[in-house]
Amino acid sequence: DAGVIQSPRHEVTEMGQEVTLRCKPISGHNSLFWYRQTMMRGLELLIYFNNNVPIDDSGMPEDRFSAKMPNASFSTLKIQPSEPRDSAVYFCASSQWTGMGLGYTFGSGTRLTVV
Amino acid sequence: DQQVKQNSPSLSVQEGRISILNCDYTNSMFDYFLWYKKYPAEGPTFLISISSIKDKNEDGRFTVFLNKSAKHLSLHIVPSQPGDSAVYFCAVESSGSARQLTFGSGTQLTVLP
Image (cartoon, rainbow over all chains, first blue to last red; front, side):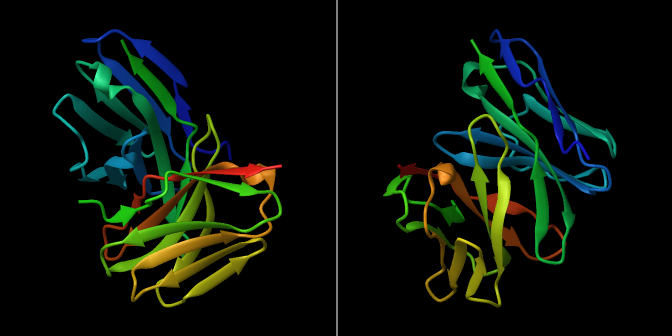
């Protein structure tokens, strides 16, 4: 398995532009999570899906952020309009129950820079 | 309100010595406690976990200790190696049907040769 695949790896955009981050989870994993990593707050959970259904989006910072999971093999995180304070590394993770806790597998992340 | 706190943003240790990373949590309703390791430009990867019904779990050079009365989790690495230099995140897994991980802010470990 190729693991969790995120694209793009790096994104530089101008303030006010729309940004779309993409994630392909591991086949068979039924949960998908979007996290944001910043120096101040570490890894913050933004939203997670279970069987393609959004379960908890309380971590989404503002209405400018939205996420979708149209099928089991694809999810997007969209920021519109983007702002400089959105600059961070965004991680997608998928998971399945292992019997010893959740088995999370993270993608390599998308480094977003909004100028 | 942070449920998981890693109060040391960084730690430096000499190669061969023990590294001790600490984590405090505020809620008693967690089933599992985990440590993840993250190298630059990569996603976090699972390192070791412990069930809430245990107080110690060992895997090679890595041992996790859980002190439920103090709501404290620690990771011991012995002996430390330069390749262990990374950011270490502790995480707690909530119980119930909506299982998810909540992470601490991370500790940068540097093992000096």
